[in-house]
Structures are given as structure tokens and as C-alpha cells.
Length: 468
Image 1 (cartoon, rainbow, N blue to C red):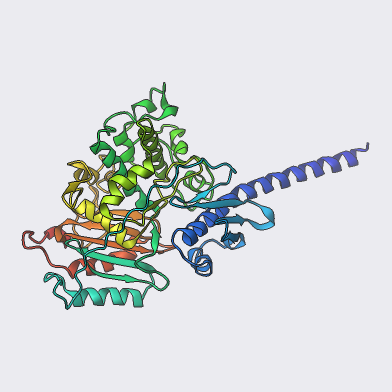
Image 2: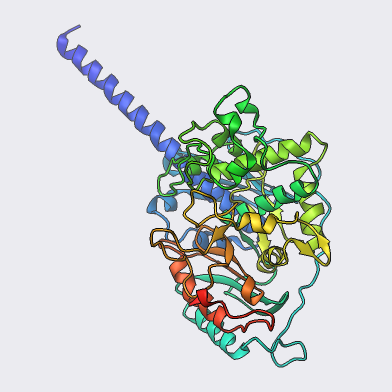
């Protein structure tokens, strides 16, 4: 064989290898996009009850152009959604199961689940509308109506729902077109506050102690990781490495949510970067490890986590719309995938406003509400235990929501999902929406201040000067 032919063959082999590698890389990247599109489409159609003609253009608008190249096929009868990238790259499948919502089944195997817990009986929210015998004297209904009407008429932040509850009564609510009081909304990271609520319920029943080392099977015999406590995980000070970059296609968080079968296992296997309690950084991986470890802890005592959630939290609240979606291993994705109506999100906020007590029954242990809103030591005052705080930082960091007191604390999720718990006005405000491509907090803050200012103080509460 001549040298020329040998070089030609070698060059061809190198080119083929490069193409194979490029194709492999493109396939891996397309999997994340396909997983996102299949999962969101499945849940919005089969959990939220929306039409495909609305979901596809609304949920993926404003996303990178590559997402447009990912096709989606919805099987309404089988309740399965398949997504695939261009020229066959990537590929994802999401399946719906009654009572459990949608799960990505990319690896083909999905852990069987027990029959879904019995449906919760929905309880109506008390309402206090204007011009009625139930109106609250300290609510300026005109100012509230003006603020909400203007917000939805000039809806550049893309609000989808606003619910305002004062003294446990709904005083106003608004919904964008195609959404109603019966529409379940995706939590994104508001789910973290649901997860810590379930941990609190387990603590109340003596099923775990947050000061104990978290019993993670992968950590047995590991001198460093075996010292990490439930509290370290809850306050996001475990020291475990995790990349929360959503704009990096194959970051830890994207692979965990849209590719991996065992979301909790990602953080369990992550290396240690800091000693527990030494550093704070936001980690959805940590929350999914909490959810997995809580599930395993309850199972050792013969308790199913989904049934537990229904029995000890959602049923007493009369919150019938909550759906906690699991990964392929059967563990609730406690960081991100919970659905509920705006009214039921408000119920959960109201439970915290009432110190964990509902209709005279204590659902969360004494001191739990104070615990979740106590700043984690390394967080610069911005984070408690799976709750965000409205405090100023020690080095000049401003409050997330100026004009609202620093004692406010809140659930927060991607693209502007919020439940605000505002003790000084005895008020809960829910905002869901899709504020995409820019930070949501500055978009929502002016409206929240208008809502806050439209409600007076209870007679037994003095104005909080920190609100200015």
C-alpha cells in the first residue's frame, strides 16, 4: 500500500472518529433538551389539564433556538410524550401515572409504584370579597383591584396567577388567559419548601432528628460524608459539590432533572468541597437527596412517603390538587416537580403563617416555622431551611423585595413562582408566572409592594418600620 493511500485511510479514520465524537456529544446535549420538553409537555397536559395547542407555544417561547428543533409527539390515549432532537439525536420519553404525575423514563425502566393514595377531599377557601358582609375593614379593595388589574393588563412579567389571602380569607385573585383557580401550577423550586414541610412532619412524629447524621447508604464508612446531618442538608451547607447552572446544558442540575433516573443519587455521589456548615451554596441536588433519604427513612418504618404527605399535610389542609412527581427510581423530585393550584399553594403558606397549626391541629412541630426562617450561618442572611428570607446582607446586599418587611419569608421557584408569607399583615400572597430571560424578583417586587401597601395592619400589630 502506498504512503498516499495509507495517509488517506488514516485521515478518513480520524474524520470518522471526529464525526462519531461530535455525534455522541450532540446526542448527549440533545437528551437534556428532549428530556425537558417531554417532561414539561407531559405534566402541563396530563397534570395541569392544558391543551397541547397552548402548551407547546407558551411553555417553550423564549428558549434557545435549538429547542425548536426538538420535536414532540403526544399520545393522548397512552398518556405518553416522546421528544427527539434533529436527525435523531437525543430522545426522551415521559409517562403519566394517575396520582403521581409524569416521570421521565429515558432508561426504559421505571420503578413500580404502589396504588396512588386516596384523593383528598377539597375544602373551599373562605373568601372576603368587597361590598359584602365578609369584607375586611383593613383591606383597601380599590387599591388592590387597581394594582392587580394593571398588572394583568400590562403583563410584561407574564403573571399567570395572583392570590391574596388576609386573615386566612381570599380577598382577591386574578388569572391570565387559559388559567383558572382550578389549574395546577408547576412549583419549580417552590417544591423545596414542600420537601422541608414533609421533613418537619416526620420530626413531629419522632421519625427522625435533624441533628442526626443523614442515613445515606452511599456514605457508610465515609469519614467525611457520614458527618453530614439532616440540618446541613436542609440549610444547604453540606459541603457537597453541585453545579446549579441552568444555562450550561449538561450541568449537574440539568442532568439530574432531565436525564438521570435517580435524582437523589447525584448529590449522594458528589465529592466534598467544604466541611459541613462552612459554606452555603444553592443546590437542588441536596434537596433531592433529602427527599430520597426521607423516603428511605420512612420505608424502614413501613411508611410510604406519598401516602404520608397526603395523610399528614394535604388532607388536613383540604389541599386536593397537590401532585408530587417522582423520578424513575420512584423518589419524589423534591427540588422541582410539584404541582398545585394557586389556592392550594396559598394553603401551604397559610400553614406557616399559623405556626404549623391548622384548624386547631398542630401539623408541624413547635419551633419548626422559626427553624425554617432562621438564616443558615453561612448564607449571609438570605436562606433558612429550604426557604428564602428577605433580610439584608452583612456587606450591603439589599433585600430581595424592598418595601416589604425583612420578616417576610417565602417559597421561590424558577421563572418567578412564589409563595410570600408576610406575618406583620397576616397575609399570604401567591404569584405564579413565566418571567423568562431575566431575573423575576425585580419584575415581581413592585407589584408585591402595592399588594402589601393595600392591606392595613391588624389591631394588635404595630407598623414594621423595616418595611420602608
